[in-house]
Image (cartoon, rainbow, N blue to C red; front, side, top):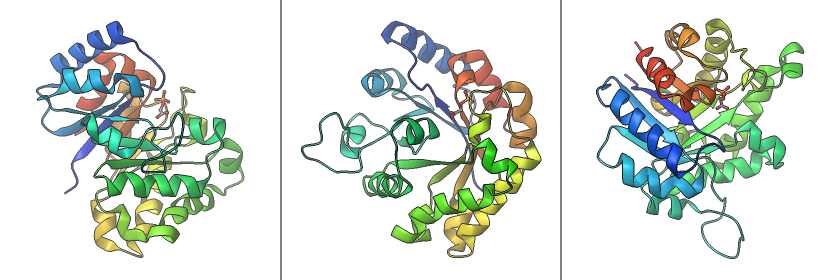
Length: 250
Ligand code: PGA
């Protein structure tokens, strides 16, 4: 049985003072929730703060990106080893806000996935289609290609104990979440694509849904068989809403 996972993606929000308040509110509201794994992915400069304030709590922390290289002359990059240095457990990879704004290719994203795994971080690989692609009915082809970039480079077994987050681009930050059925159909597709090559990796893979999750729609989404939790943007900046979403996990 896969444990459910809810991950906060703070994106580029916060500062030392606000974070301290939000971490405190998280700890107060979430410390008794033992039925779900919880993590928060913060901007790089706040990893030390997350480590200091979340140590010995039930809330894990991580980053929102990492370098595809291990070490060297790569100005401005942050390596997997550096994330481990600050106690990070998770790292978001290939979020569409990065993939589009910083032109990340599927191949680069695959290398980052491997890099995270090599250093004992749990990668959260974001996949998803645009509205135009959904309307054209090619969403499974698009997501399949994103998965194949990792599978073709490293084999399906690399997905063992990893996390994939299905994030339809049209649902991110728009207030328009996918329905439970739309998400379930895609989650089932993702799991079966991995299962066709490696059954046990597919069984251990957590598939989150991300895109306008709120306390109201979380219940329906999290009830779906192949939805193992969520990646939460906007609502994670409000501890009360984030708590309700974590509680929506049955
Ligand atoms: P949202 O963001 O919850 O604000 O839509 C989700 C995400 O980008 O991970």
